[in-house]
Image (cartoon, rainbow, N blue to C red):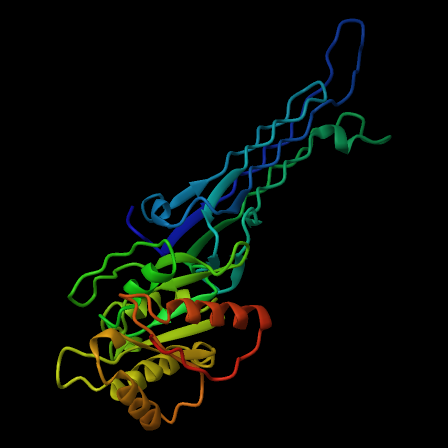
Length: 345
């Protein structure tokens, strides 16, 4: 199924039914008086988070959603039937905004969370409400109220604890395959990842966290270059970023230091809060560089890096288990651990 993380929809709640103007007419009961019932309320529209849905593709093609109108009132004190509500099931992590005002209406961050998008109109009053000692045969009734109508934007932000960053072909997809059961596409050409991938990393019998892989970033991503800018929003909910750096690039002209700084600049231009998230460096492909330790030390000095870093090989799995364990400790402790390096055996 194609991954869709943005959609625009219209929601129209049901109109309330009109009240009835009716009088009791039975044999041997003269002047029975008013007995017009109220109209039924219009149906409302709700959004519910459903963990079994992982894309907004249904709302890309079905853009208009309506709830049922309420029935009008009847005689004999009979009220009209209320309209059926419409429930829209959306992926967990969906943010719903009013298109006109930009107001955030809901952030569906938990499975089963329910929110009202458009309220149905109230039913009108029948003439039995207007009887009094001086008005014994009222013919007044009220019309049902109009339901709310809104145009909404839906934005899906995946729920993950850890996010992967890096240039195309830095090894992000290989890394997530090494630490989890996720199986994103892996190939020897750039931009093999076209959609975000989620994986569950298990570091013990009852210890795990969720990791997210997004398409590779290139310089100018914040302005729209490449694919990664479309999915940077999916890193907004993460608590830790793992920045993969290729220490064994195939092209001689590639500079890991320049590329690492470019990724940091793109984060800062896209969102300051994303840039300020804890970020660790993962020096990948150490199995292809005999002098990997020397290269890593040179990159660290050039970047003046003081934070945590790890040397890993996503292909062979070297250092991946240690990295996952450290990330799990960080997520549990909620604070930055001391800098350390994991060395390949």
